[in-house]
Length: 372
Image (cartoon, rainbow, N blue to C red):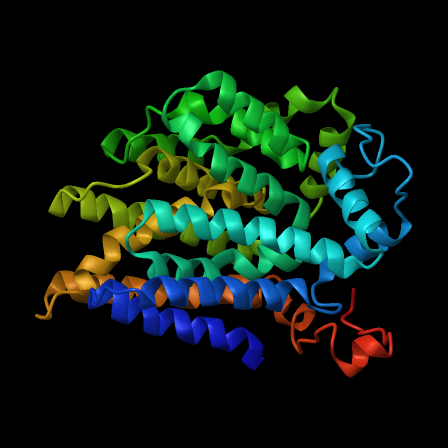
């Protein structure tokens, strides 16, 4: 447990020192790189940590290295993920090799983008650790690679460079099919958090039963249609549905609407946040499918959230607005922590206790029973 607590504590202290108190010197970059190295070692050198990681390990052990650059779509997984596994196995036939490859890609993209696009780096990183980091690095290994492609590709979307953007989307799809969602993003750039948007949310809420027509477009694409059918049959009950609706729509849209209209605060990535809110409403129709799409927007949400909330924490005087932000922040901590580590049924048991490749369990090749 302590292995996971360390980066949380360091990030919180760094956020207070460098983001809230605005203390700036070379130590900021050293702490940032220290967190990068620590998290890369923690995740890359894990042993049988993560439910999905276990099944990816079985896939890695069975994969062939005879034809590394095989772009076939007939495999169980998408081509680029298969190639990355084959390449890692050709270098050294241990799943740890792939784990190191994977976490270096995730951390490099994540740390680079945050450093370049936010001055509140540690606050953003803390939110990332809280909301999605462990899930991205030890569970949804394929999808997280597709998400990182989108993060690096985002500038093309922002600058309307459509050919480059859709090439990036194609690359993301070659890691995970959920990236087909990215095809529609350019058509939603007009969205803004205003009264018309709130009305749109209400209309979609009232028309949720019509969303079945959305999935008819994929009936002739076997792999996507199979996933849609599998996820359509899964349900986690009304509590989980409300939790996702609250964390994807009620909290972010409510907070940003308040900040924009009362204080005229510029909402960074505003249309992406609007899409985030729309997906939250749609999650009432199908929790798994639509919240999966929100994974692509989580980093942008974290950056926007920090931009809006941290200036209020810097205020020395306690005002009603600061109290509102603090209350909202506490609620975000509680709900995001619950979703990250307990939803739907104790995710933490897949990650705790932590074992490294240097542990006795690893050296003994011991099977860690995590109810896979």
